[in-house]
Image 1 (cartoon, helix red, strand yellow):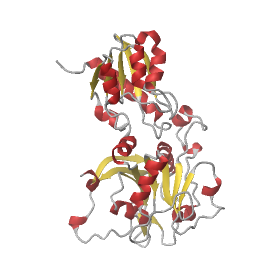
Image 2: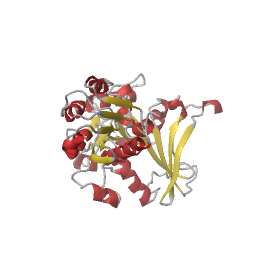
Image 3: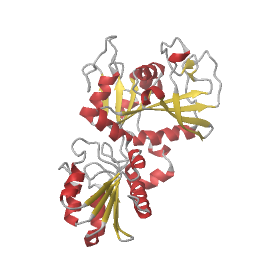
Image 4: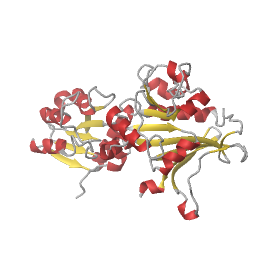
Length: 368
C-alpha cells in the first residue's frame, strides 16, 4: 500500500503553493505553507508571511478552529519545536488535537532537526515525512544552505552583449540589456536578503542597489504594497574606501553594510591582501542573518567568486548586440591553461526576456 494517497499529494501541493506567498517577505525565515484537512475538506490554511509574525501552522489553525480536532495537517517544513519570537508550532498542533501531520521535509535548522517530529510523535500524533520533498526544498535553497553550511546562497548576475562584452572600451555600458531584462532583475533583487557589489561598480553607475517599486511587475505591485515589500540589505566591498557621501547609495533609505576599514564590517584579508570573500560571506550569514546574496559584479569580482567556488547559481542576460573584442569582457583572468581546466556549466533554464536571453546555470564543480 502506498505511503501517500492522491489526496495527500493534492493537499501538499496546495501547501507548497501557499508557501510561495512569502517569497518576497519572509527572509531570513523559510517559506512555509500549511493546510489542515478534515475528511475531504480543507478547514484551514495559511503561510508564513514575515519573520517575527505567526508561522504557517498558526494561521491554518486559527482558520480551522475547533475543526482541527482529529484533522490531518500538511506542512511543507517540519513544525518548529523551540521558542523563538513565536511559540513552537508543534505544540500548537498538539493542543489543537490533530491526529496526523504530514511534512514535506525535515527542518535543517539544528534547533529543530527532527525534534518537532519527535514532539508530535511523543504526543501520540502520527507523522509522515518526505511527501513532495524536492518541491519543498526548492522553496528555500538559501535557508537550507545557510543552515547546513553556515554560508549564504549566492546568485551571480551578469549582463553582456551576445559576444560577451559588458561595456565599450571607453566604459560606456548603459544600457546593454532591454528594459524588460532590467525589470526582471528587480524581481530577483526583491527575493534576496542582500545585494552585494563593489565600490567601483557603485561609483561607475552611481547605483542605489535597491528594489525599484515602479519597475516591478504589476502582479507584484498588486500583491505587496510598497511599504510591505522588504528592501534587501546592500553590501558594498570598498577595500580602498572610495565611497563618497554624494552617491545615490549613501542617500537612499534602507540598510547597508560597507566592508572597509573603520566601517560597518571590518574586512578580513587573504594572503594577497584582498578581501577574503568566503570569510565575508560567512560573517554576513552568521552575524547578519543573510541567507541569500544577489551579486551584481564586474569582471574582477565575478572571476574571484568563480575561482573561489562561491557561486551557487549564475543568472546571465545576453543582449542581441555585437560590441567587438575591444570592449570589456564578461570575466577577468581565470588562469586556465587547458581545455580540461575550463569551468563547465549545467544550464537549468533558458528563456527570452524582452529581446534578451536569460540563462540560469550552475557551475558543475559546485555540484560535485
